[in-house]
Length: 113
Length: 114
Image 1 (cartoon, one colour):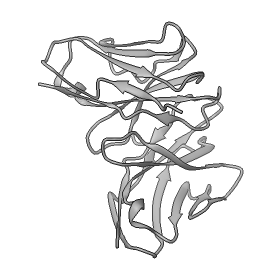
Image 2: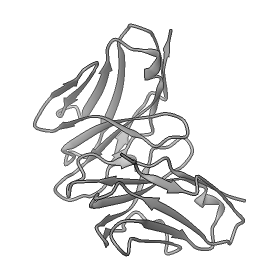
Image 3: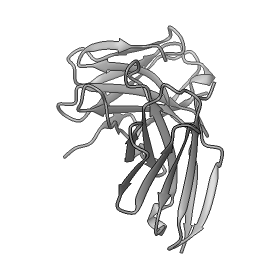
Image 4: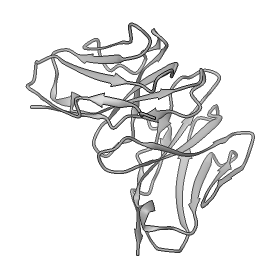
């Protein structure tokens, strides 16, 4: 039973434009959300996180938006760069009860020069 | 500084063999996690250590899977009598905080069971 879903397996964007990656979750107890970026043959690398007490967190070109009522979060990358091409995973956890992150299946982003 | 390292990077095992996968976390990291990532899927939690104590092993798929971290640093994930469905990338992650705000992942061990 997938508690975190990324319904778009892939996304292509022109360099300089905005990339929007989406993630939905089902467990209303999740209170901490993260995005990880993964290059081939490497482990995932932490990108940005957001706590459920906020609805937006920004770090440079990366912004994560959280809509708790819709159980939806998104990652915006602007402007997109070719080096952003990777697989992006969203993850969620319930900090009160769990030690684990629940990951989505990933979205493969290709930024076209 | 050095990140999380895992060895071997690739392992081919015949069905029925035992395998041992090693994780060297970042020095001083309290928390250590093991995940299993099947092809086309996201990482799935297997087990969690806080120092040497295994506090959560709810994700281990069967009693053929065993993990240890005897001195609170290096960890080993052992799979006995491997099956084809065990083929996956096994990821180790560590974090410095008790509440694992950010987990730092190793490159993974790709296990192929033939």
